Length: 189
Image 1: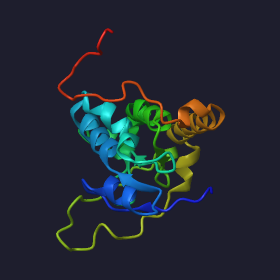
Image 2: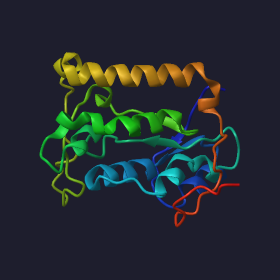
Image 3: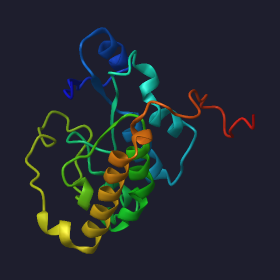
Image 4: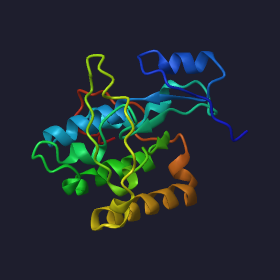
């Protein structure tokens, strides 16, 4: 009890592997992928609902996907927020809806070190074997107390407290339970 064994296995069969083993979670890339795509293209589409409801792929209530906006393998989400205009974390406010989605999803939220105060390191998605992705990126602690860092820390703190205090935000209940991505509106019934 109160122990998690998470598979860092990102593929189409990660949920199946989790279901077939004693693992309790797997890294689910769906919210990360949507977030980066949406921030880059200034859109949100119907894929978002399925990215938030990935617990439908696990076989028991003891198993829950781990979702994230970024991790040690990718550039920080705050960098992506301002990437198109070369502003990086200066456009941190664009990440707020995704932070709220992360903490209100029935999945387990994971926060990358420094994400909560606006770290904005970029890293190549494919380093062509150079090793540039696997280099130390120390946290810049001074950014935790600047205006961006304070604003983001406040948001992450409030969302973590809400998730802790309201068990419904940790439940597997999600509406709509299934969403076909071709749909653009809720069924009125």
